[in-house]
View 1 (spheres, rainbow, N blue to C red):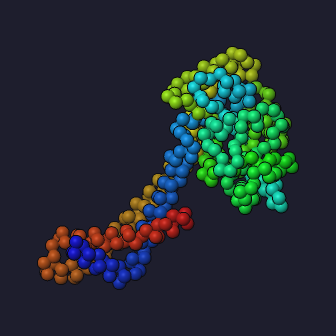
View 2: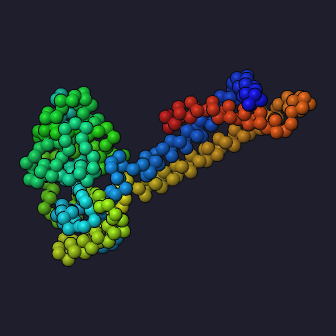
View 3: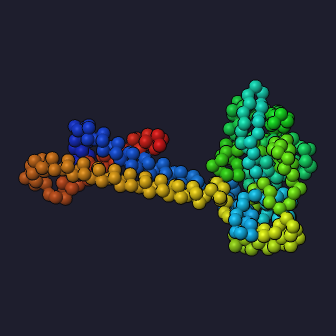
Length: 355
């Protein structure tokens, strides 16, 4: 231990004696490692980190497929309702769709992204409100009858200054008054964790929130996304078999609208399934580039350390003449390299934040 501490003190003195070499080495390491850390952090956030809800491994996304094998992330409301009511593998099946609306709360106005959701959405997500309550099935039974809204933690802070008395206040979406009934926890971002929603309104208020003349009564291809929570003990294979059976029934019951209709399910992730392939390819390419950057950085550091050892040939000869063996010299160089590694910590954080 005493000799190790001596090596550390000697290594620190050498690094301080040559600040130019130390700065270049530390910066090179920080850029190489920081770039890889940033890419791996992005990959973790997009593909590996589960949704911040209870038992997220039982959540699946439902997609409709056409006769040509094309996949669509949309449902019509009647097909969704039949799938919800006839299946035996999901405890909850919810429809939702991202929308953008003009929002006015007091003197401030903006155009945030939110979601139209069915009344069982928050029960399906198994998440509660930070303040007030979430939307309930009774809020989503009659078109235009319940102008209530749940807002995000971010919107609560921006527009209402984190006022604990926000429940019952009014904000206007597309000039229509909605009563705030709940505020969600900060960790809850919505159906897709990478796309933060600022509000959630009942599906039956779609004409006020999304006034584009789209009917909920039309069967066939629609505009709604669906997510289901599998019952305990149900596997994805069993769920897929069930939704395939239901797709065949709906095609037989409504051949005019559902010709070639199919259903596919995928484990719920933090981003829509149709983006996964493209994003994963882009991230894979960036990871290769970042890996090459790290490889070049390591090669440069190795070359710099080798050149530094060659310039210290007189010192090495003196130390050998005083009885230092090869193992002792190698341990000294290893300690000096460790000092560089430790010195790069702060630089790695800075470079990662910059990237």
